[in-house]
Image (tube, rainbow, N blue to C red):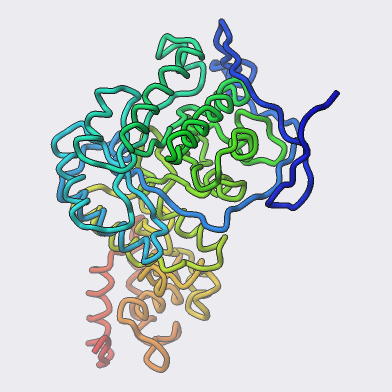
Length: 464
């Protein structure tokens, strides 16, 4: 006889049967899902056609790991660099604090100095948080600094539990719960980072573990956050895909079966299979309030979800920037390249040198007639990056005219037409360059020299 209680779903207002309680499945041998992850072959994506409903929370936000995961694949930042970027994060997130938190390492004096200096700023957002391993020694650092919340590494796949930690599932769970209890006893809110969740036994370990974490949170009166970490980038967002690779399946399971409220649930993605952004957006759509990101996607191996990408995913989903200031993204990119010395790939969306630069003559002609034809949005207004045309052998007269108008900010009656004598002079020189064997793009300085020389010959003035 089915004795499950009939309950009302407050979200849909429909009657449902209460879900079964999920118990820990303490296996003797690790379940590595070898049928999905054969290792000597490309991983497999399998489907069971179980569809879960959209469940985007009313409020969603971004959390930042630039100073934690973002430092695991590059030289450590200087303290002053961290503080400057933290200031930028505060400005970018706007008055509504869409960038809600930023997490830090605590292991070096430099990192701790940065934490103190960022806390001295007194910003409500992003809140300064930390990341530690599940050890009492690491927790002492959190207490010394006086942080209100810390992330705790709680690896959840059998790959980690059996092979790295040399434990079984019950031992791992008891160890994790002990550290979380100590965290709660001192009034610090724990954020449990479920490492490698896309290779974990969701119903045999992850959900039973999270049920225990939710119990602890209620017992101590302190919410326990869950960060679902797609450590290897195996997550997929395809409808009907099976767990453990299904992002929506994981979020649904944590939210529905483990009882993790949306505001205590966030997604942390990696980009090994080019899915970091879409997987993070999917986590929002199916019930996670938070997505964890790194500036420019810089992080372990292929990197994390780019923070700037999720600013625009947010705006597209919500229909508003909610006070965020995306022009700051351009300032951050300039600072990162000029002051930190990191070269952002030129075609990186929103921040790369060439992200809104066209070289094709037919595209340049479209830009000259109407900027909207070949620009994703008003990048001049939103990012302070007007669209540009790189002059080459394929740019044509339209490309040259657009370059001149953009560089000298000529609009309306002052704008240069593609059939003007000035454009003809410049194009003649460009054509000669490529007929002579040139293969590189014409530089800005070369173009300016040519333009000024042509202006002298034509007895005209430009840019005054």
